[in-house]
Length: 167
Picture (cartoon, rainbow, N blue to C red):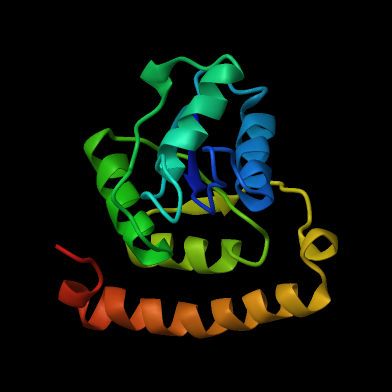
């Protein structure tokens, strides 16, 4: 049994997943195809448009044939660090293992690093590349942001944990 943590991304007006969110959902579904008892943790709060990113992910998983009993939502996390902290809590409480990070390639290293710092061993999902979809400049901007964010988030999670999550 694997646990697929699906990190949120934008929800479009009307509740449809953005291209990035759909890629993440598709990666989880594709990775879980040969898994007899997959478990999913969609993560993400309400952004610009409702419903929550986690709810949109859950709806797509259910449409794909997965039972709501296989899905535990994290609808409170507003960023990557909060998602890792809240999902780590769920993983530990439910005694889940074999964590698979379902997010864009540029985002995977930070997520895996933060899980490791939280005591959770995680591996990356196979996911469609986003470079062509985003264009080079936007993709490069995201890569730079991730480089800086992994330094900042690592500091928060290890050195200043009380600031790592909002109340």
